[in-house]
Length: 395
Image (cartoon, rainbow, N blue to C red; front, top):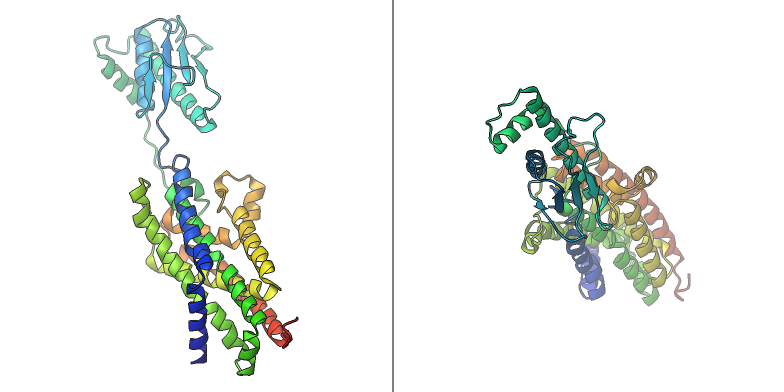
């Protein structure tokens, strides 16, 4: 009965604190929507369409074939005969058709505007390389008489494509390895900012403990003979429930809210039991960390600095703010010390790798061990703080 009353008290205090509710729900929702929108053109299942200019100094069958082959490599892109200087430009020399069989061969000139990003440059360079190789193969086949001269341009392209295409079997072991580079904006942003928001329970937990100590409420609880475990559980259980609520709400926004903004919907792949285990593991890790920070902080200001600072550092190195797939090797190794990184890897194993309960178990074990260590340390410090609290509230 006493534990139930203390848990109810914590819940009422939290509901009456709009700042805490904003930190726990409004902030991660805003981050989720903003970052999913901002990363939608960077992390996506297919590359964006390009607009480019293809200049041919002399019109010929070879230049027209090169145009068709390049369009086949960039099916969603626009190939213009002329355009502004802000567009990438491919220039074919006047002797393009006459030099196709030369060895070594001088290809077309590609000029990029300054704002053209590196990945788009690599994509365009690869497409030009394949289209040029197909055009040179056509010239060789025509020169050797191995190609019927009566074929239409479309049939010629089809014949060359058949001679240059190979069937390659691909097998992916998706449930293992670094899956961040395969995630789209929704699969990366929703779990990342969900985890970030869940870890922020440390702030209201520490603030509540400081208010009770400074107001003398903690002394009255001691006078009532409440045990240490009861007091500690009364702090952990309400925020454990809040964490689970955050988990459900933010996943729901990813599934049903983001499509309303034109973003890909979050699809929950993998086993349902794995999501339950992951939610409990993250909630325990965050609640126990909150207990530890609440026992460490000596004032509300210290609680704010400790809670906010540690969360931001863990997020920065754990792949929450910057995907680990774009980090240098040294930073990827550093990310392994962040529990946020473990939680994110477990999420990606499910969402991208279609993993099972066994696949996420190693990450959940890490989170539970972290929860045990933080919880034991927090309980020890909490006991010392309670024992050292005096009637004068100086400690």
